[in-house]
Image 1 (cartoon, rainbow, N blue to C red):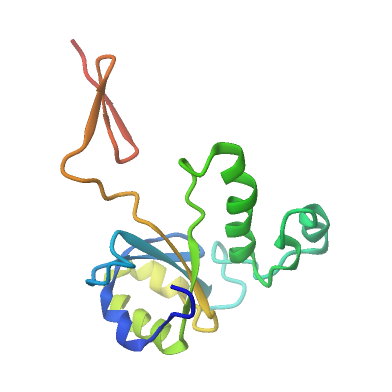
Image 2: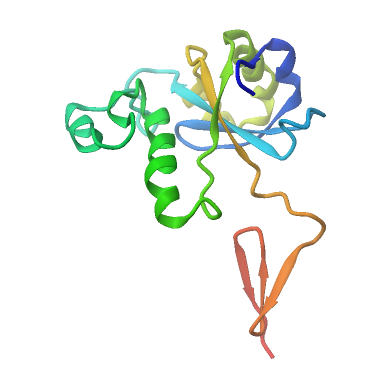
Length: 175
């Protein structure tokens, strides 16, 4: 995906999955093998400056830069989104193992792609989220990750009298 930039025409292949205070999560619904089974985190910005709960700092403080200076490029990141991804890639993945950590990858996006995404998903977002924040159309990238909510078939594990459903939910079975 080196050199690939998602354009306005690609926005129709992404569907709203959910959101938090700082990011929207979109699931890929198109047919490109490169994106199948992926989700994308797209950064949001507050609609009103100073909105409570919607602040997403965009750059590292001087203290944060000092703290992270020895970790491959984190101290020079232009925003916290990229710093967080590098932290996962260079700190958490080596500690826990790449088998258990998905740091994702940055994918370039055009302003038109982001504007189209915002229009396409507007009616799917909760009204209070729409009022609080919008897609940050000034970003030039988004974070692409594996969609960990997808599993082949109805995969689950039976272990020691418990059923572990592989969707971050554990159900105990009484005997």
